[in-house]
Image (cartoon, rainbow, N blue to C red):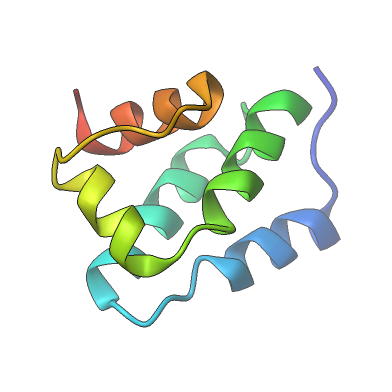
Length: 82
């Protein structure tokens, strides 16, 4: 498993900044917990998650559905404890 570069983690951390404080906390919290252990595929899935609009992300974390992408769905489940 290759470790993400500081620059890559910085870009992901910046993209965790959302229009909703709740999402900021959930997304940056996931990155804080996994930045040292996540491999490239998991970080790529997290980057795909960050491409989504806030209302859709909030629906997913509120338990109203999951993304079609299984790797992104796994991150949502990890964030929410499902």
